[in-house]
Structures are given as structure tokens and as C-alpha cells.
Length: 165
Image 1: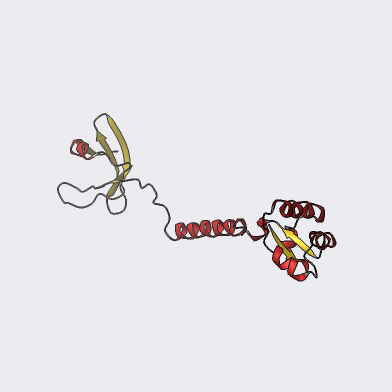
Image 2: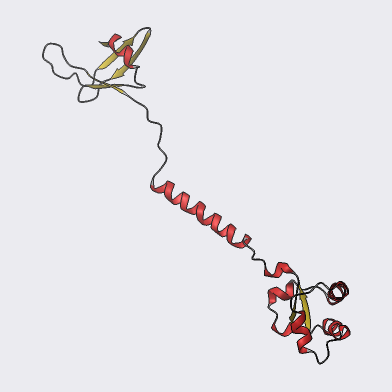
């Protein structure tokens, strides 16, 4: 707690000042117990006499204010929220510049060629047989057929490719 002259008090200090009656009670307790208050010497210096009653009159008139300690504590809440929003915006910008890796589907690519001439067999239906599984695909204009998802590497050796009619 601190005693300050009301004519020099900031708005923030006025908001955190005790009401006059409560201030008188707290200052009276301080005077009775001998516990010093910040600003008491300044208040007594402004008075013509240093009597306790004159101090109480100044508080009653509102010439001097007893300000709570909270008036001098900095409120970080206003800045924490803004800082958190700024940090979130930075994360969003960073992610938009470098998007999260997408799951890629691996494909098995087979070039289907005529066994005698070696020419690609374009736009033909091809059946892939791997163990018990079979799937039909069509080759593109270059004779390439795509099998998705890619078979495991150990089963590629058992992969059979047949022309479908």
C-alpha cells in the first residue's frame, strides 16, 4: 500500500485506490501499530502539523489516496493473449509455406512389350497375377501399366503379367 496525492494519481492508481473510509481504517491501524506506509513522510511533509488527525482529514477529503499494491503490478494478460495469437499465426504461416507431408501411394510400374519385336503394347488390357490375387489394368499410350498399391518387394519375383482379351 502506498499514500499518494490525488492530484498526481494516474487513472490506474485511482482505479486501485481504497475508498476513503477503508483507507482511514487501514492508515489508522498503521499509525497505531507503528508499521510505516510508503508516502506517509510525504503526506506529513505537506501538512502544517504532523498530527494523526490531520492525516485522517486528508484521506477523508480525498486529497490523498491509499493505493493498493495491485496498481503497480503489470498485467501481462493483455500481452500474453496477443503474443499467443501472433505465435499461432506464425505457425500457420510456416505450415502454409511448407505443408505437411502427404501420404504417398507407391505404384508398381511395368512396361509391357512384345517379346519378339520389343515394341510397347499400347492401350492393351493386362492381367497382373501375384499369388492368389489378380487384377486387370490397361496400358497407356506408351505401353506402361500401373499397379497400385505396389506389391511388397519379395513378391515381385512371383508377379506374372498376361495379356487380357
